[in-house]
Amino acid sequence: MDEGFGAIVRNCSKLTRLSTSGSLTDRAFEYIGKYAKSLRTLSVAFAGHSDLALQHILQGCSKLEKLEIRDCPFGNAGLLSGLHHFYNMRFLWMSGCNLTLQGCKEVARRLPRMVVELINSQAENAKTDGVDILYMYRSLEGPREDVPPFVKIL
Image 1 (tube, one colour):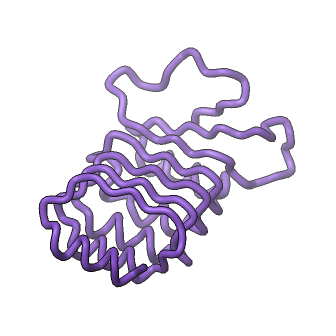
Image 2 (spheres, rainbow, N blue to C red):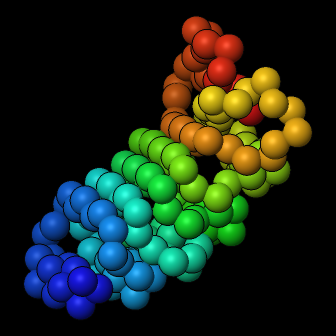
């Protein structure tokens, strides 16, 4: 599968949208970061083995505007590797990943003009440091005012 995705991104230089799901290692994301220079939208689910995969994407895909990640092993190190790029993106959505509250707070601290929302199904459970969903976006108006109780804006 990795080599197949590598062939796709090498030979489709004008590729702007890509969706992947399962059976891809960090190597596939290395190919995506190296060759998919026109990529604007990427959706990833059940793929990758480490933060290195996310680092390849965030460091290589400079035109990336929309990134949706579900159920991948990416954590704080992968998230923090994109600090240089997040202001250029419309949004980042990460759910079912290995993010912590501390890592998300660090991103919010270092990028004060980004809106960082945490959506937790276990919002009342104060002893957990895990984050169910991270939704981060740019806004000219600042954070929204209509947040439900299970959404925390950092």
